[in-house]
Image (cartoon, rainbow, N blue to C red; front, side):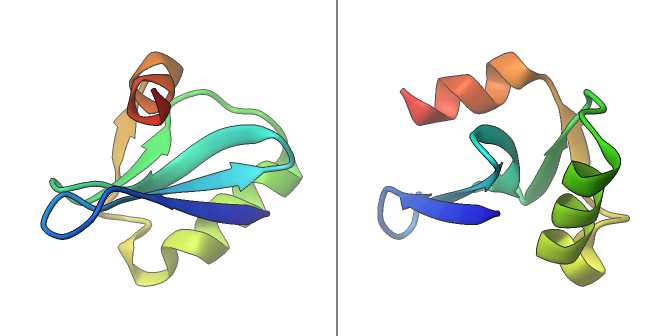
Length: 70
């Protein structure tokens, strides 16, 4: 599990990677998580990363997350 930060204030975005797959993060709207189930371990990574925000995180497509990385 690792995180990268993209951009700078006020448009900073953070992306969580589980192994080599981007699966969750924060953008200028708030917390998000992939809508695709990958594995039990990846789900644990996402829940640990989002902490108290996990119930508030919106589900997004993998394409959305990939678009943030471009």
